[in-house]
Image 1: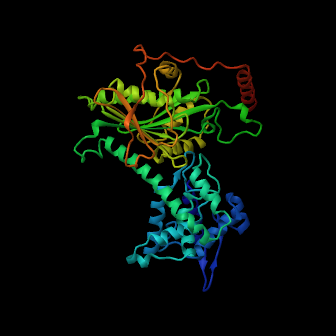
Image 2: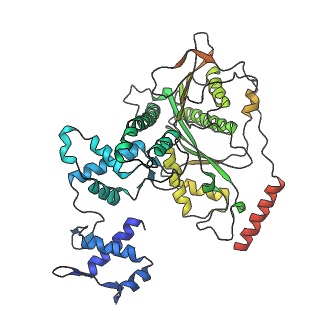
Length: 493
């Protein structure tokens, strides 16, 4: 039962068994047909005093409607046009600037933001002919609390990677008055607008590669392929997984399991699981992208079952802006894809740190929420949980071997300089058939630099292709950890 359904049950029960006198409600509490006192009622149902008191308050304030007798609809109080406009604005703001959490059904706004600052932005964004939508700060607080607080949060500290720019503005605004804080709103809003524009650019790439959405655009979807790759936090998928962790188990009793997620436009969702016997480094990420390209090629070959689809000419790849992703090896691999004519052009885009991919985070969130309700002793059971999460399905694989791209490209790649501040990279051949690389600070920046593209491959890697990398063997410490885990599980069972 959801939180909404749970509260709906208790409010409906209070409405059914209580009576309104001239100036107050006469509340009565029943368990079956037997009347009980207030305290016995909430203790019997396992709810708190405050929870039941809140249900009583909702009844007293009339935050309900009666339809066909005693049918109760949660939060169906009369919604004014002002309230609707505020809720719609908050939802749009959360969609553009919020970060969906990969392990819960919540969206987090920038840490350090206040509801008063949110209200200021709402008021400033109203046009001259929208005076009727102006509301007070207290009413904005009320709307946020009643309509949005269950799914939209403003954390005191960012739970995951934090944007340095946002963190800097947060520190600068600490201890200042409202008027003093206002001097930083312009630069901060400009930064947030860039983050939003970067995300919109990525969505545009996805639409170009989407078979359904691109039909109206001259049916050019087959020319493009779009891939998002991101990693899930390892503590969520460690094994064994319990709904409630036994008290005598320690973090050292669990095995680390890594989950790399991919979303490929038109092709589907994918999760690649592996134990910690492979390093989570640049070589591993290139392997994930390599598998995704093979998946794209297989999908195009199969086509609609009768006819194959044309292979894409352009590849768009979206990654987190971290050092293992923006590596010399990843850039070399992108150049090699163009050099061998797998694609005519490859674009790598890196979202700003702290402003992550919305759709793949939602995929992780669904999996994490589902996993919290299940127990998984093995990797196979974890994969079964992941496959249950989505109506359209998700393809899960256990990575047991990976290519050694790092050694394969060694000695065949030019060094890269001054790329840390760049968020977008493009690879294509020039008129002489040589692969060149250009970059921009942001994908929305007007000009690719340098004007003369940089050569990325010094020479072609061996045609035979890369060999496999050896898994990291279990150390003495790792074996002790396994033995400790087995003993802990025996104690439970």
